Length: 307
Image (tube, rainbow, N blue to C red; front, side, top):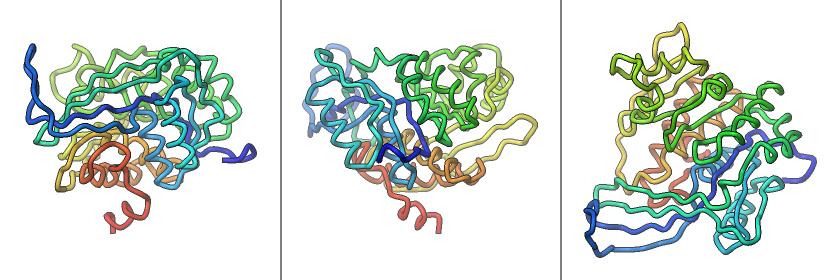
């Protein structure tokens, strides 16, 4: 992306290398289990979502902090290959890039341990340094894999410029009302929804979502895996979209694909229910292939699935 080009989507991004082992089942404490295969591939919720948005036709820019190491170079190679603007990616000597250790089970499910590495140093100053690109974009997205102060500053700047803000609250952690009030679209899965809502709801997804709307989020879009997704907006009935039956290879990156495709559709000017339909289809396609990046579909593939 050249210096004079604006981004449609800016991602406050986490980056890590995924170290993936395929095992038959979850491992018990103290147990050793032989793996069937091992691979190293690009990962990080922010990076994955940025690639998904780029493959859906958006011009994407990153705000990120990575190590000046082999894994960091892997990230830069990936982003340049996807035509993603990396001018606001800080590379730091002497710090490790993030790593995710992933166990994938025979049924396609997974468990993940993430070490964020240099990403823990991402802060408000990085968002301020990227103020011009934030002022010119249409959507700013982030996840809970990056420090909240970086997201808060980026969302403040985005709101001032009239851009939409999109937060994928994973891994789930309590969100300050100050941040929720800056979120246009919150995309939790069901377990994240309940954790974020806390104790003050009646145990239903509907009530938990309404709780988050009452605290300032402008829309809550709950991803339900194979069951699809449901959109909640103040004063409107929930909109439910059924899932698609697909042959599952693995579910790594499906949520990130959903987020990135949603951001790209919103940046194109699609209304939220239509953008949700696009994201739902992209996520469905992503589970039919192995790995986060290889699973992310291109715009033409999603268009073909939607017919």
